[in-house]
Image 1 (tube, rainbow, N blue to C red):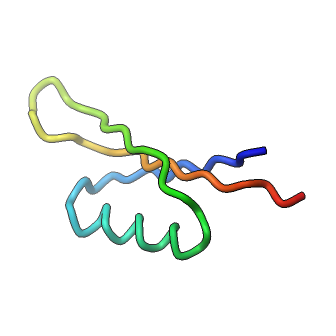
Image 2 (tube, helix red, strand yellow):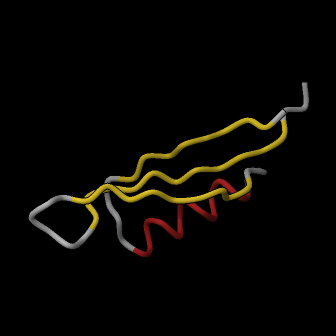
Length: 58
């Protein structure tokens, strides 16, 4: 059965996202997707949710 991990990121900069992806994949999580939260007044995302999965070993 898959287990999900969602990491909320308030700084949507390339180096921050890269750091999170490298950190969690090194811990055995598999990258599943990324969702961005937008503000109406800006074209740049205000935050992101990075989603990871892995198989439950129990």
